[in-house]
Length: 83
Image (cartoon, rainbow, N blue to C red; front, side, top):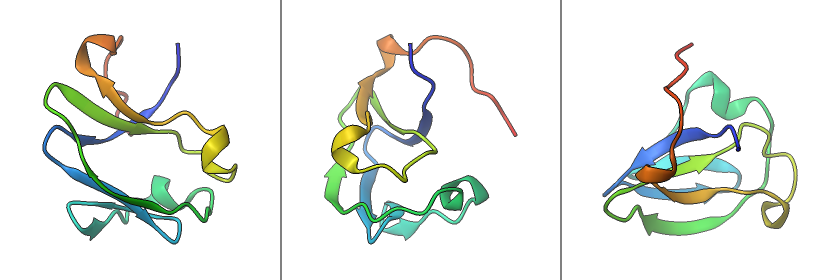
């Protein structure tokens, strides 16, 4: 079981540019997105039908050591935690 943040839903376009998260070509400016600086680079990708895109808040570690990406909605357990 992993705790991840859902950052995009099916049909959204997700990418990382110089560590900044973009969804649908707009930089995500929420406070949680700047908690841990990173240098991730990820080309744009469209979230598949029936999936969401998840990332963790601790992105200081290299991308290849981090579990993130598309997850089928059937794999989600629990409810959203609102801040």
